[in-house]
Image (cartoon, rainbow over all chains, first blue to last red; front, side, top):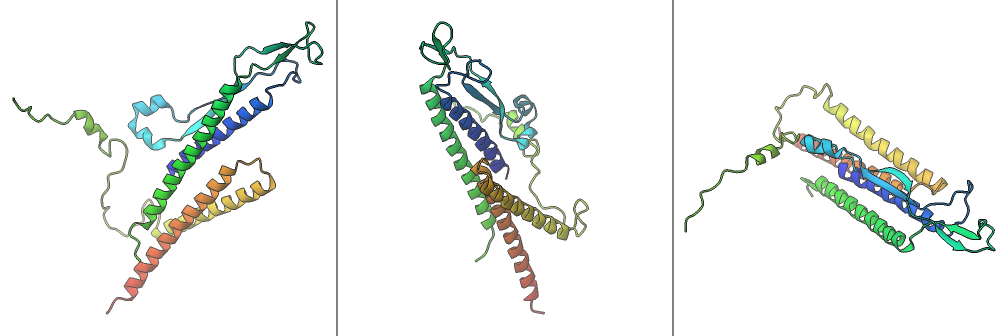
Length: 142
Length: 110
């Protein structure tokens, strides 16, 4: 059942990643925030749960593979987009409105990748489930 | 043209023996009626049933949680259901084989 558990952790991570992308797209045109600081697009960081160095040192650690986990959500370091719109209520003293430094194409690419990774993990899970079910048939009569 | 002598297998491969990577060697354990790890066979079966039951209760709870609040990711629900189904099927298989063994003993001509 470990294979299923590993795939489950990946589903969890990809789901969160999609939520972050949805948040970015939703805020693509945000001009103001509650605290006044321009909103910055977020990135979800993920990494293996098991310590890779420990895996290399101790081959027995292979038995304790535990999938992937969310390492954190950080704002990306992109310069905000400043647009001259003097009539805008969120415009600053010089008439500039600050939009998030949001890369539409990159976000879409990441979204498709996330959706495909999610699907791939579902398929891996299905294969593990199929193998388990087949193993139950081993030695069954009639 | 000379033929290369057969080389010795890379000693590194010896490290891939099952016991080296932590897998228990497959083989018959000595037959004995003494409980394994202080646990009788019956207790093992009961534990298995309790485990399957727990997974079904978990799955039930997930379905209820999903019905009330769809912020629960749907894969958590389907995963719990699948886990419950698989452990239930394992339980059924164990039961089938036990019953089969029992029946064969009972059918024995004396």
